[in-house]
Length: 327
Ligand code: G3I
Image (cartoon, rainbow, N blue to C red; front, side):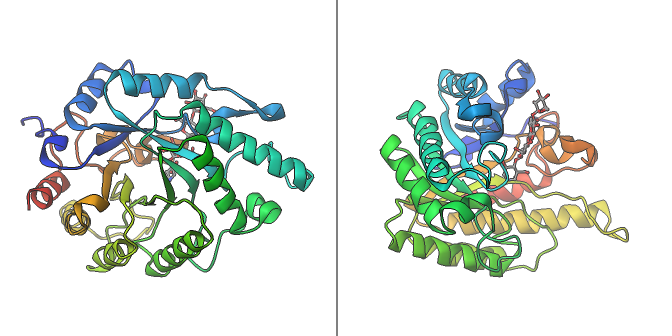
């Protein structure tokens, strides 16, 4: 069948997707990126796991490559992420004296954000700060050493000082899948803003559970929109994999659920005022690019979690998104 029409031509806001250095020599992927997106999120090169080296040294070789490539392609570059509970832990240890921990924390955020000053449209300054089940904040070494909300305010202040122009985001997942987590996230944003954190936008990763009840996505976006901040759909995918050994859904039923939920999300995004539509980013461009088929060997090779198939043709969810964007 025909190639899907350029997604960026269907939207009056930026369309994003992830990229990694390993894809830059893949002519098919490069052509698909050029056709569909106007924004790129490096999938891991800007993370602490890649930049932070022993002795609090930095290795920017991969991050420089990705930011340079994005700019060469004329893409907006979105930074992900400066502080994440799950990374940097070999250097940021509990044993470190708090004064040294704080100094290195500040130096990491300001050095990384400062290196790309003026080149990033935005940063996920803190990723996944809310507890997994939505009951309060996630415990992590940064929270323990610097304070459960103080580390977040601190990171945003350092990032703002290092890059005055980037839109600074708090980013998290399961905000639509788990209404309690979504509410906890929004209350956290309000508290942080009240403490003076320069939060310029909120990122909802939107790794959708296609079996959630209709309306949950719409309700989250309505509540999130009421904060008045730009919203980034930052990591959209919608796996058909099931953890249930008794998953009786047919492929057709899974596709129908994907179309319903992704359509609801695209419509909810379109219901926001234009100034609150920061960007609409999928986590991978084509199914074959998805971490869900790749990582840790747990990937389900038959999954189809994105808008495009391996050949760049429209998956059913693409039509739902295109229809919503055209409204
Ligand atoms: O490419 C290197 C390879 O050269 C090296 O030999 C190998 C062993 O260290 O690592 C490879 O890098 C891996 C990288 O993915 C690229 O494939 C890293 O180990 C691996 O940790 C990294 O996983 C990423 C993961 O976040 C952790 O950073 C996934 O690609 C990425 O899709 C995933 O993305 C996260 C978001 O950041 C936050 N939201 C959830 C989302 C999915 O888990």
